[in-house]
Image (tube, rainbow, N blue to C red; front, side, top):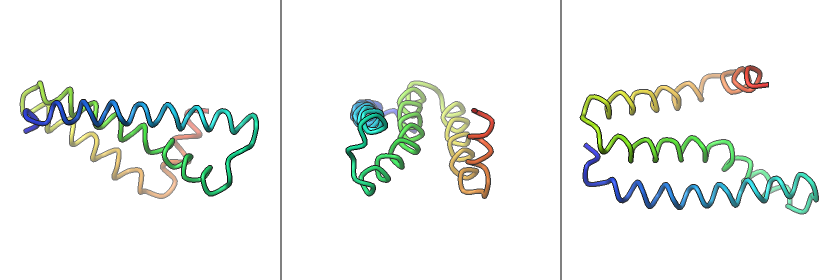
Length: 100
């Protein structure tokens, strides 16, 4: 299913990783020096929250491109499960509560 897309996932994953490092660095600097406007801060917070999930999905798709079809289906089902449950009320708050 993903055989021909391995290089595409690799490039997208690298770009996402660099973007996320920049966003995390700016958010950490802003936590200490408070220089980002609120709108930019809100956008970066959303990127921080969901960017990691997108990066995991892209890198996972790259890894699954080397595996057989069954592993690809299992991986996509797990990613779909995560995405679907993120839309349930209270899931994100319960997840943060568990992590603390």
